[in-house]
Image (tube, rainbow, N blue to C red; front, side):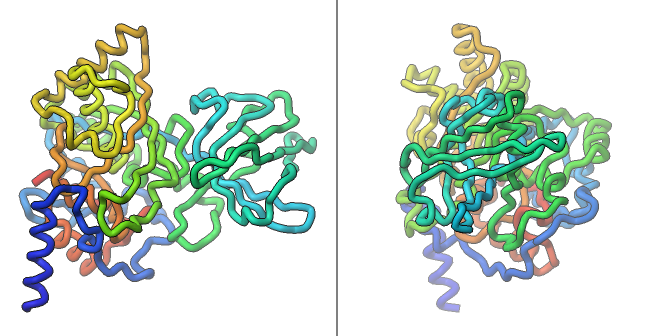
Length: 418
């Protein structure tokens, strides 16, 4: 009992302290390997659904999600599409070299990079790098029975990564086509298995549109046309935006204090129409997935940067959200972005964020979240705690005791802000 009391006092003090001083060791739980879902269910929308509202927990099935969402709610989805970002090359010596494409460098724009013909350079992580000191790697592939070749050459060392120049000799294929011919879907490392044919379909949301992610926005994997029809009939509105999920989403927090953990950069794209729609829905927004949360909350602070005449409004650094003025409402902020776009004749707002959402964060956009169950000592678990407070322990304890499946292919939850 004394140990439990001491632990709870530590947690309480952590919550009262500055977010940068939070100890990641306080945000953990026991996750046995057998509780990690290694494969998806046969039917997407038959996963279990934990509902947390008003401090209470109940259990449902995902196909009944519409019954838990209030009429007039606006649900916001991340329509990014997972690319086949893992490329397996073999040197003439037989050494296996794995290249994991993270983000484009030249062209730097995602859509242009995927449309590029002949060559494209990317920031990559290299597996077995010590075996690839120099030279060009080659991988044959076939189109309509004719053999072509994808080549990879290291051209620059980056911080924790490599710049790789890809080139191919098919005159009509763009890089997106080449990846489809040669790449593999990068399923999460904690699944401890090879990519299977079914992952091409199931590690992708049914509403995915814009290529660029190396990890799925997994909260969206449960949605089906049946679920959408029920939401529509209940008067729940839908809006979409894009955040390309990077490999950093799997990056473990190794620092004892959150202030010493560096968040990865994620790339946002949203239309003016979506901004206006979301900005008019104060207090009625449920985000689908933590990626949608990070996008929405980042956009709010980018609008604040415009209103406050701050530099680089399309870039939100890791801790900026905790330092910017808080007097603006959602509509004012999103209207500011729309005005910014009008002045520059932009139809899409392209931005980048490193936001970290941890206990002590003041949510400005969302009132609820649909999400899966996340890894211990992860920044995603910190985000959940920021939303529901220390009740996350009660939620995860219930999920563990009631046979919920965890992580990317696992079950789902609807969490409403405390």
